[in-house]
Length: 473
Ligand SMILES: NC(=O)c1ccc[n+]([C@@H]2O[C@H](COP(=O)([O-])OP(=O)(O)OC[C@H]3O[C@@H](n4cnc5c(N)ncnc54)[C@H](OP(=O)(O)O)[C@@H]3O)[C@@H](O)[C@H]2O)c1
Image (cartoon, rainbow, N blue to C red; front, side, top):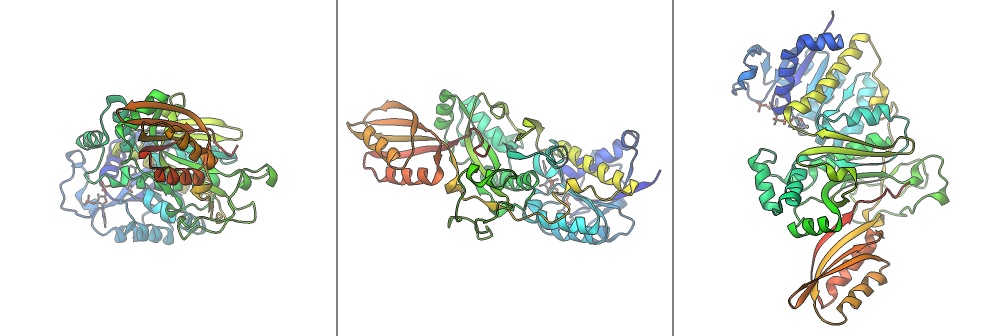
């Protein structure tokens, strides 16, 4: 049987689990898949570093601190990049593609920044570029979107793709602790870094949102396109009020395709589309396209109130889930472990076996795993101010006659209709908890600005979007 030689770049959490699976599971992999994968070398930053005892049987001569030498080795068929970050991972992947090697990577940051370029380069070079592990660890969402649902008209892909923030929010909801206590618990359990910004500020989820939207809607969506809010401002009291109202707060990625850019939909059927991007948009965002062939998408990360009846509300602890909505497939939810060395390595292994099998069979790279054989169009990203959803707004006001009417006027003047209101007495103040009907985000911004200017409004605390039905159906 022909062997496939792979170079593994990085032997940290994911790399060491992959090496272990390749060595311990070698015979089983051959039996199950018919491919015989041999490790050509393992690149690390520090070859002298003590590695876990379970890898003691790895031939020490496989380790190198020169990843470029490994990538340039002409006997290598597949490069598995598990270093992370942009440098030198970006240059290493470029070099691997240039020298005709297939590439497997789990690097969400790099794919969210350069995914479209890398996909085009790989397609031109006739090699595979596979990145299942970059989005939701062990959950096979990339392959599902790219292959099984390749012909499906998807209109929304949303989900919980960051286990740390889901753990924190679950602890706040179930144990009644505040954000800081929940985060400390996550750090104690090794679920959050000592600097948790990548998770709690939504950067990690934003990278995954960009990748998901690009595959789902076959367009080029980049990290800078993603409107991002983290969970640091989610207060314990809002989590408890949400529960009383029948919601669970989750950090969601929400990607949607505007109906206007979907085929077979006439312009006058289309939902409202923006005429120009707002100033708050990143400079890379193009002007609103005249032609309906350019995909118009919204790609966002934010803490949202999810109705308890929605499947995403039941995703607890550090688990991940992706919820897919499409024209013919209806609703699909994938659930599982979104991080951790062993589960992530499981997804990397799937890609590695796939790339190896195709190489052995002399297949052309499978076009559907990349968004398209031709370069995909740059997406038009709809400004957040144009998007509509329902809102939860919690404010403290002076408990005096006429205040409620004044507040209600501000909502009404800005075209925001109130679905429910609860009042909680608090001495000389009253807490008002509003849930609105769907409203344009720009109108909510104006409402909040005017409410801040009302003398009787002491404080506007919780402001959260309510996750509802897709607006693009
Ligand atoms: N961990 C997860 O749960 C998870 C989940 C999904 C995706 N991912 C992605 O998987 C990738 C790897 O993550 P990880 O958690 O395994 O990272 P990690 O534990 O930090 O490991 C990184 C590895 O890269 C090596 N390295 C760093 N700089 C290098 C350089 N210049 N040259 C050669 N080797 C270098 C390190 O060497 P030393 O060992 O000598 O320090 C280490 O072995 C990242 O892209 C990450 O985003 C991770």
